[in-house]
Image 1 (tube, one colour):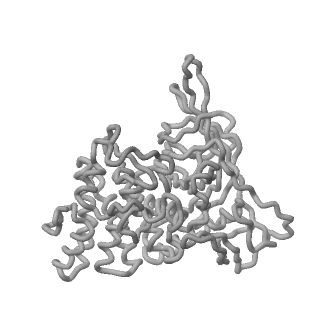
Image 2: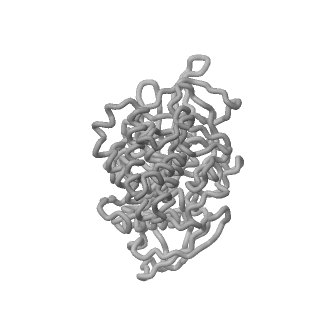
Image 3: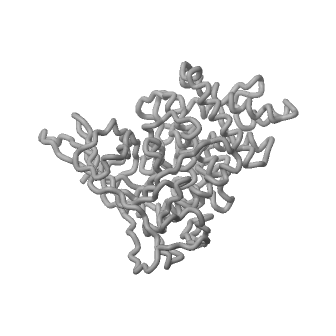
Length: 448
């Protein structure tokens, strides 16, 4: 079967008969996915001869993690997160599931969603204090722990945001089938699985870790995403953003959008594109999620060293991307993002036009500006939240603007929030010039 390596935006899906979970909202609706494979690597549940599922108050489990470019193993406290052997507390995590099987059939007439097998809850055994690496239980414990940690750190800094509990979905089988015509005019079905990504879906308030694939393993993506704290924390950051500004119920936000893209010759463009306000808002969402993970995880937990497509580029503390391109918000960066001509992009040669890459650039520049007047992670979180609240409060006014003007005005709002923190206006202007030289802010920009 042919593998699909291009971005597909699913239109509204219709629930077909046979869905064992028909009383739930349709999952994976209106989702943009970029990574497909015919050889998905589904993790399995660990078979345990379990004698007890009654847990003590002080629950600890060992986690297989990937930190600072190396695999490691650490014991973490899960008190309060596990209820009757299930990874759910009703406050942060509503339920943790695995084993869901669906098929999405796309045709020129309509798209169909077929539920093949409903999800099962992940159940833990009190006889164990660790699970084998790469199992369903290990993946679920990893993701749940760092989602919980991000929630706790965020709520310490910001107390007025109501964050609903999420569903954690581990490695569902999502088969996408496209009905196409061959050279003889015959209709055929070409199928491949969604793989190699982590997704946040606002419609279902869920975080999904897709299976990895044999192909990406061969290409060098050897790390399990659920072993990287930044990824779980980043996806939960999207959930926090949604709690503040619920504007995108049908959108799904993944951690990657360019794993398999091919790079065209340097400085060559191809295709035509039009930037929408939604593109900008998605980039803001990505920047926010990157910063949430950066501020709520410990320094040794938030790193992306050694992870294909994340290393350097998605490190908030790095001033450049993996190919040396600057993350500073200059006029040339802004021009690139709003250009009508589509640029090539890949993990090794990222383009500013991709929302994750613009988001990474914004995250760096926003952090640098905030660093100029505070070192407090809690204070930075409060400024971020105040900015997103402003986006929501002024959405009707902002949405009347053209996309580029929307970008300029909304980023100006963030910058002006920070300028108020400086006692010396000249010092504030210097900080703006260093982080956002591409924007004219009350004479503070040098217009680079």
